[in-house]
Image (cartoon, rainbow, N blue to C red):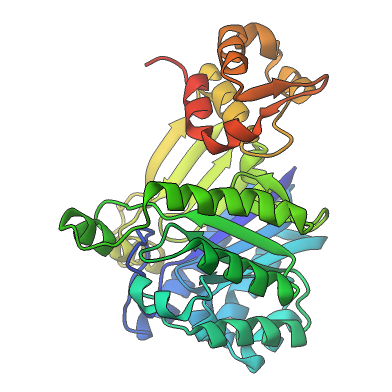
Length: 384
């Protein structure tokens, strides 16, 4: 079995105003305690994956690059000691441009990290402080240059559209700047106002100057046409890359492949079940440090054994996020079922709406379907 591993680092220097991810601004003295707990979890879970070959690792957050070089090395050493990493393993780390320097990037490269993802969001200087970013546009560009100098050729830049006061020109200039620096992958996400975030509060008060709907739609249309015209194929709803530079780890999520999540709030999928670790930082640390008491339960908040209908639906709508869509033979083999018999009414309705297209081997989203993906995905969910 090939396995992906996700490692969650829940710490940030400053939380972005739109972010609802499980992350904290906290005393750096807690970092070491958390990494010790995380490595104990990694060691404890390794037994059931003794026959697996790990071909992707993704260290996300939060801001993993807040950690010292020693702590980052501790994580990577722990994974290598307890899991069988492929010789061609893809190891990605997320980075805030304001938290890296030449030495840290060189150390990461030397430790086997071969892909880096910078959360830039925009190169429009005036917008960065408005969304809570700790770096400048110049620092973001410099971080990419330093990573390239350290030997990274597989670099992603995250960009966002629909930001307060953002224009279509802002987005195009950010895309041009990223491509001009030679990055191999771009993720372009629309802003979502998530409950409980500072942006949600500002929005409720009418104090968030979001772009008009037609402006946001123009930004979306720019991304989906401008990037492919410049060699960045849209291989997933929000992700673009030249052929061969797709993020292999994220493809696991969309291709219904197993992955193990380590750390606070990390999610796992294997043996037909989904698990989610606790979001309670103290509970997580206490359990793995042995201070939570003998009867304390393993800090998993959710365990969901997927029934057959749910499993088939997940296989379908996750695959539909990608440009290739559902590979019909793979679905039929995985579930000993016929895809068209299972979803005949759904497929007929979605084709009528021009949201999907059917080829000899695949069912995939049309350009319109990519735009209204949630409508398509919801159609595959079993009735409750």
